[in-house]
Structure formats: structure tokens, C-alpha cells
Image (cartoon, rainbow, N blue to C red; front, side, top):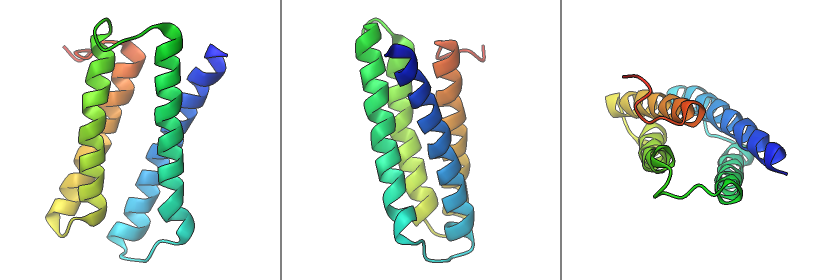
Length: 122
């Protein structure tokens, strides 16, 4: 069960960032109205992503106390959500800044997940 959940979590993360990228460029930059699918799908995918992440952490026995990298991922997740909201709802240059910071934060979260080290770049 663990490998299936872990791979599902990784796949959902890839789908989530691809959908974010598509939504930003198709709707935020080109100022088109997204359809119902693009309003609902990110919430469903991100909920499944969070659920699989929590399930994997519970199965393996990771806690915030024994896994500093997991704590870092969770904190970074809040920044990712905030920057994503700024990218989708902001105006002018703040929209671009939100997009850039959300994308960089996602890359950081993925790198921490792979390396299990919040300071992998040092």
C-alpha cells in the first residue's frame, strides 16, 4: 500500500503544478474566464494530494517532531498557497511575482521531499 500511496502523491504533485502552470498562463495572463473544470479540479487534486501526503506520513511514522524536512514542507506549502492566490487574483506586477514565487516554492517543496533535507542547497 505504501508504494502506491507514495507514487500517487508524487503524481498528484506533478498534476497540481502542471494545472497551476496552465491556469496561470491560460487564464491569468490571457485574461480568459476559466471553465467549471478549471475552477473545481485544482481543489479536488490538491485535497487528494494533501490526503495522500498525510496518509504516507502516518504509515511511515513521520511526525513534525522527528522529521524537520516534513515540517519545512508544510510551512512552505502555506507560502505556496499564498503565492498561488496572489498569482491568480493579484493585479499587475504582483500577479507575476506571485506566479514566480509560487513556482519556486513548489520546486523547493519537491526538492525537500526528494532529499529529505530542508537545506539541501547548502
